[in-house]
Each structure stands twice: as C-alpha cells, then as structure tokens.
Length: 118
Image: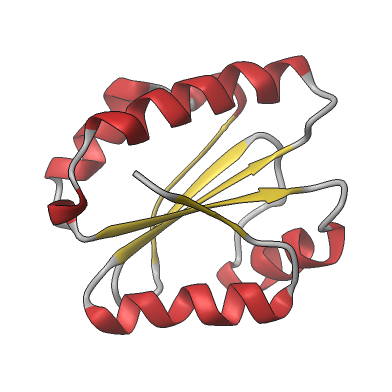
C-alpha cells in the first residue's frame, strides 16, 4: 500500500482531508539516522504491504529531521508526546485511536487496531 511522504504543513493539511472521505489515518514518524527507527520502519512497511486498500486507511511517514517543524506541529495538534520512531493512528474524526513508539511498534498491535473499530 502507498505510504505518503509528508514534508511540510501543507502536505499534512492535505493528508488530513483523507479522513473526510472515511479513511482512518496513520502517521509513522522516524529518524533516518536511528537504528531503532530503521527497525520500526521495516515492521511498519511489512505490515502495510500486507493489508488491502479496502481497509479505508491512509498511510504517511514523516522524517523528523528534515521535517522537524511538521513533526512538532503534529504532536501539538494531536496532543501526543513527540517520539521517534512513532506510530500515530487517527480515527476518521482525527482523534487519536492508538499511539506507540520505539519497540512498542509491533505488527500484532497494529493488527489489533485494524480490527478494532473504537
């Protein structure tokens, strides 16, 4: 499944519009120079490759080094602590459904949230 690269506030605003089409949104924040981020990104990519677009989920990733301002804006706007790596899963109303960082980013947890409609 396609993972959108968010580089600035404008990209973020456009990505959020996908929720109005009935899609949940997932943001993966990472640092390209961090070993834990590399590990978590592989888990996230492998998980994303397995599910169908019919799940009504839109995926994105944010490089916290090159898009630092955006990464901080997302944290403030969603009222979540800034972490890297981090997965933030949003419901269609843009409220946080699930948030995990570092080694808490696991395929099993993402699968649980995929089937959990809350």
